[in-house]
Image 1: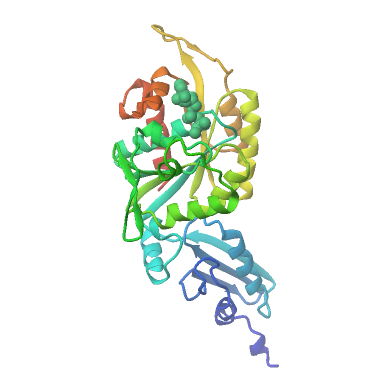
Image 2: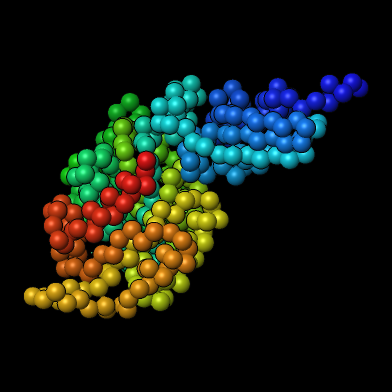
Length: 354
Ligand SMILES: Nc1ncnc2c1ncn2[C@@H]1O[C@H](COP(=O)(O)OP(=O)(O)O)[C@@H](O)[C@H]1O
Ligand SMILES: [Mg+2]
């Protein structure tokens, strides 16, 4: 064999990568234009390949990364290999899905998908979801809500919606209220209908919400996840290409322990944690500037520091927030002192989305 034959070249790496397929689109990464860059140092036997995923939170990213790495490692002369991941712009994604229709058809023009999670139920996850969505919309960002809390789909009540979505050409048109688009299992099944959701069904339902709902152009799709770190949460997070997650907690110690578990889960799934929202942080006493720390103080901040993530907002216990939820007119519809932390949260989310 001549020495030239053993020479490591870009072409040889590209050749090896031709066999690696996108598990969802079932076409080669090379053919799909997902291989962005190949850097070679033939003297060292080092190769670095950059892959553009359809979504930064692509649930299959670890599998893709592993398959790309083993394809590179199979090339003669490779001693060090590295796979870097980047993500496509919404235009690139739309073009790609135009060629290869996919389960993600309905969200091809959605720029960012952000999930709202919590360590346990009752901490204000749905309250944060609706108020964040309305605040983003009022700040000029087109926004939708996907209620993926299959066991307690409260979004329609909180948004004051009881219609059912209608279909058009095989796609469902999301409902719209206060300028925000929304879809919920509750509106699909009808109120009061008990639904038993098991893993495969949840997976199928989520796929339909992403694939068969005409979300159209959205800057943000906010997803209300099931509470905690059980099967329902794991199934939903694995079925949705999330750009990031916001974890809601209350300040007391038990809640914090649950949140640590939730953060651990998202880290394992390699989903970026955008930050923490501390809800029911304190109570403003009537007619004074005094506040009362009902659940203790500093929990959210400690947690944010421990995990090196930002504390995005501290929302007080505020009767108008609860009343807004109960009557289907969320507090953030009014931009005032009672809703200002939701606007701060929205601005922090927008800052992170450059
Ligand atoms: N900051 C707040 N101030 C007052 N009430 C709140 C606040 N956050 C949530 N609530 C109320 O607490 C209850 C639980 O909130 P919810 O958003 O449904 O929690 P989750 O979705 O986490 O189960 C609801 O009745 C809601 O209106
Ligand atoms: Mg809820």
